[in-house]
Image 1: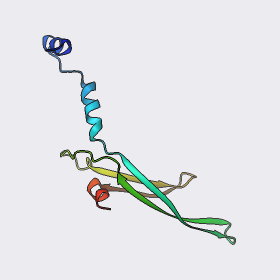
Image 2 (image 1 turned 60 degrees about the vertical axis):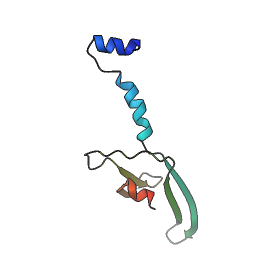
Image 3 (image 1 turned 30 degrees about the vertical axis):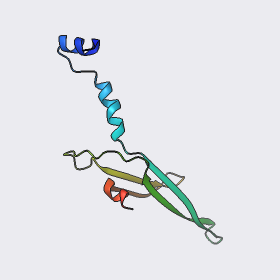
Amino acid sequence: MNYIQLNCQLLNRQNPFGHEILASLANIPQYCLNVKQVSVAFDRERKSIHVEISIECNLANQAPAIKRNSRYYDMTTILTITSDFHLVDFRRTPLVDVLHL
């Protein structure tokens, strides 16, 4: 029994939860994005540029799946905005769907 465990036992306290937080970081998925420019078109009439891109999203790590009772626990949120911060798309998809893309 180490010093921290002895103090926690004597003071009737739990172990420092900071260690639990650090251990739970391994369960947070890390994503890998691959962005490719497909085409660029300039519209002289509207004075605008249209860019088509392809985005692939994969998991960089295989985080262990933990079952929770929460409905949104294993969800991936995707927010797409322009450079002017205008909303293009917002969606929430299960992490399982990201694995099978």
